[in-house]
Length: 224
Image (tube, rainbow, N blue to C red; front, side):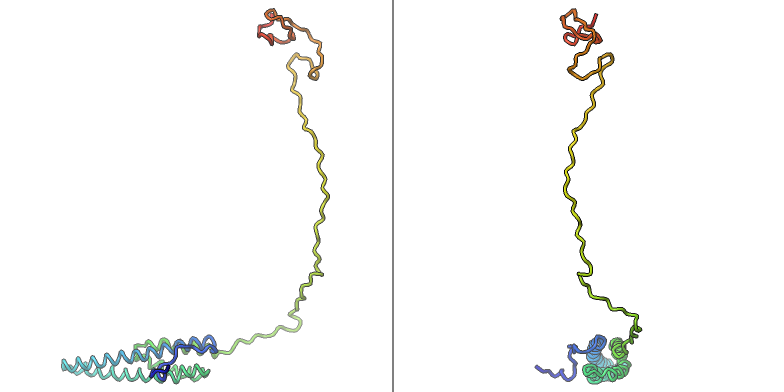
């Protein structure tokens, strides 16, 4: 559905075929046009209010300021309308040089609109300059400098399988325990062997025990 503003206000949709820098310039120029039209409305309100206040108070300076505001409002409105034709439409059609040259004109006129469109038009100029900048030239490799890498072939790099050693159980060795040293005076020899040593008979319980023992192992009586 078309509106009366279709021929005045540009569309906010950016053509997808534009380069990245040109797309940014298209966005900045759209908002610059919006600010031109907005500032035209603001100056119109300031002009009407100043004229009304000047007529009520009889102050000629206020009336003159009101007419000046109306003139600036007309300038901002015309700038917003013609900016669509001279900058935005040119960007949409790929004529970046014409849009760049036209943006310089509206850049100076934007100072009248509180310099807000001027800031955006500077960005438009810079973005279009980047979009038209020639691509850097890359020198090709000299002959023989670049070597093409051969494709990988698994047959050229055989995988070596690890050799498995046969399992050999370790021989079990029984732990060896050392025999405790015999007490002093006791005959050496393995347990159970018959030893020839003097015996002593306990006078209390009549039990014989080796003579090297100081007490009877049965009743504990001292050897006498």
